[in-house]
Amino acid sequence: MRTLLKMLPLAGILLGAAAAQADVANKLEAYTVDPARALRADCKASGFSDQRIAEFEEGVCLFHKASRSPDETQRALDAFRQAQTKGLPPAHQNFASLLTGIMNCQGAQAQLAAFKASDNKDGLAQTRFCRDRRISAADLGSVRWDQAYFEYAAAPQPNFNLDARLTEMAACHASVLAASYDAECGLISNISENEINGFVDEAAGQVIETYFSGVESPITAMFARKIERAKGLKESAAASIDSLKTNAGEVNAQHDALQAAYVAERDGKISKAYSDYRDAVLRANTILDEFNRWKGGLFITVEGVNLLPKLTERVVEITEELTRVQQLGFRDKSEDLVADVRKTIDAKAETAKLTAQLCRVYFCELANRRSMEQTIRSCRRPALANNPLCITQAETMRSGTLTVDFEGQKTTDVTEFCTAAGVEAPSLAIGIGPQQSATCLAAMP
View 1 (cartoon, rainbow, N blue to C red):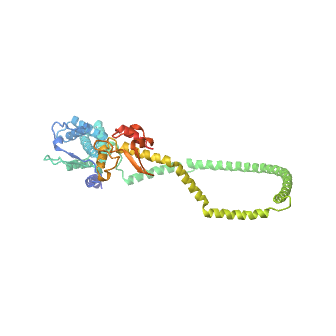
View 2 (cartoon, rainbow, N blue to C red):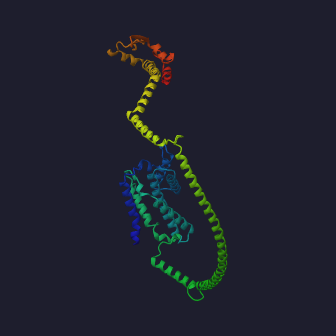
View 3 (cartoon, one colour):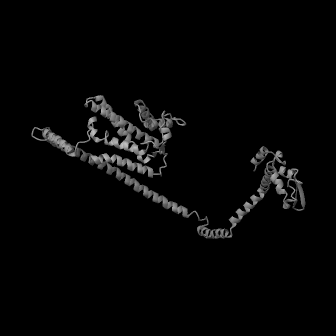
């Protein structure tokens, strides 16, 4: 069983590594250990714009040194700690956790050897062993294998590959990180289930013997006190109930007396209110009868002629006339007539508005300096050969004289025509600039 437990971490690591290599959907940034940087003798990282990456690469190089000094080991640990806290990509962080776990495991192995060499008497070595062991377990346990996108580039040097690192980690789990060393660090992890059940049964038996068994046990005495207290509460409650019954009888007697007085007073006032209401109803009916008689006499003349039947006949005639008017559509025709009159009144203003719009489109858009060349090209078409408003190559209108045939031929100058429509004089020129063109178009009615 213990052999299987030792193999489980390695199996989990291998499965996690395989899953990480197969999971390409995450598209996380990968990291490859370059032998050109990791195997340098001076371990100086250069050519990186990001100082964090440079420190990380220096730590990787220090890790792979064959004869690494304690100072170099501490420098590598510091670099990897920075990599895990300063926002490097997940692949860098996971690789840093793996290497720090292995280095702390190596430190724990050295401290364990020193502790055993002192015949298990060097307490400082034991403390340092437990510290490095705890940190190594935490670092290796923090590696997220689903994001472990790191690998080694091919190199001829031995043990310069990922398999060597995984083997070192498996060796750590099988040695200083094994559960057999928990007792050295004051951890209780290897007590069997039978031993735990024996401890629990013994403690439970002691509690039952002390607090629940025997006449003199605290629990028995507590229940006896509660029984005596309950008897006292019962007697006190019975006395209180008898007192409440006596007081309730007095209250009921007072209620009956007050109710009798209230009923007598209520009936007297209700009888008077009923009598007043009946008199009011009779008086109102008399008034309504008199009103109906008065209303019936409104339509009778002094000669005694009743006009109501004639009014009823006229109502029928008026209704028939209203129906005839609605069928002939007099109302719709009247509304159409009003609309035609309004259009006639507003025709002059609408004509002036349309004229001003046309003038502004011609002078401010078609004939401005920016559109001049395109307008000249359009005027070269045969269909516009005789158009008086076309612009010649000399940037002038052909004639600028408009001719209309309305009750005889009439001519007018386009500038005077547009001035009469309300267009300002500065805008009535060929080739106006962009600013004047914008001002002219902004005044478009």
